[in-house]
Image (cartoon, rainbow, N blue to C red; front, side, top):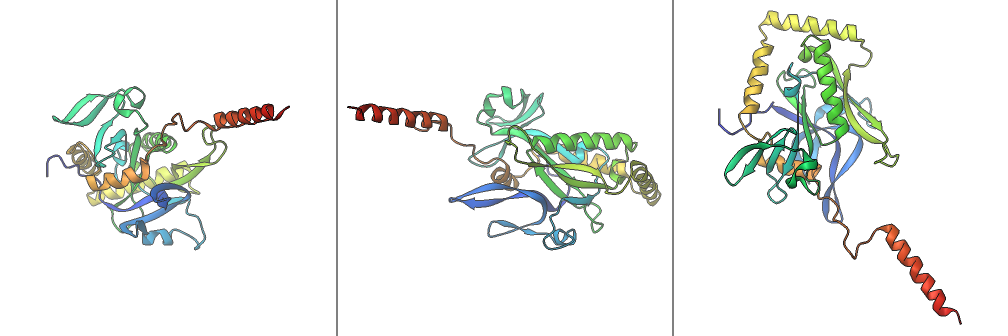
Length: 298
C-alpha cells in the first residue's frame, strides 16, 4: 500500500443535488430540487448521467427525490466522513482538515497535526473558505457489492441529519448498519437566512413503506446469511479504516479541484467605499433629490 495515499471506497458514480453552470463567463454552482446520479465522466464541462439515473425515475419528467440504498460499513464514520475543510484557492489542493479539536495541515515543513479552533476561531478560515465538508458513500443496486456512489455536501442540514441518522440506525440495529434497507431522501425547509425560499438537504431513512420492525428483521436475516456465506463485515470495516488513515487527505488533487469549483466558490467581494449597500445608495439618492429641489426653489 502506497504510504500517504488515502484508500477510499471504490466509486462508481456521484449523487448530486445541483450542478456547475457557466454564467457571465464564470463557472458557478447551481442548486436543484432533485437528485441526479452521474457517472465519473464529463463532457463539455458537465457530468454525464449514470444509467441508474433513468432506471430510478418512473418517467422522463419525474423528479428523483428518493434513492434506495445500502451502506458498505457498520461504522457510521466510515460511511460518512465530515470535517472542517480548507482548500488552497490557487492550486485547489486540500490545505487543512479538522474536527474542531485537531487538524491536519499542509505546511512548508510538511503535514502537521495542530489544534483546530473551528472556522470561527481560526485565522486561516477568514473569508468563509473553511467550512464543513462531508462525503457519504452508499451502495445502489446489486451489481457491485463493494462499489459505491458518493454524495458530497457542505450543507449544515445534510451533515447534521446524516450524522444523527447513522448513529441512531446503528444503535437500533445492534450494529447491523450495513444490512439495513435504507433510502436517501431529499427534504426541504425554509430558514431566516433563506428568506422563506426552500432549501434542500439530504436525509437517510428506512425504505418507504417499511416499519422499523420490518427493517430490523430484514437486517438480521441478511446479517445471518452473510455470516453463513463467510462475509466478514468486521474485517471489511477495519480494511476501510486502515485505508482512510493511510493518507492525510481523502480527496486527490484532481478531485479537490472539482470540489473547489462546486462547493467552495469565491465568496462575494466585500463592499468597498465605492460599493455601498442598497440602503445607503437609496439614502444618497434621496439626499441628492432633496438638494436638487432646494436649489430649484426661488
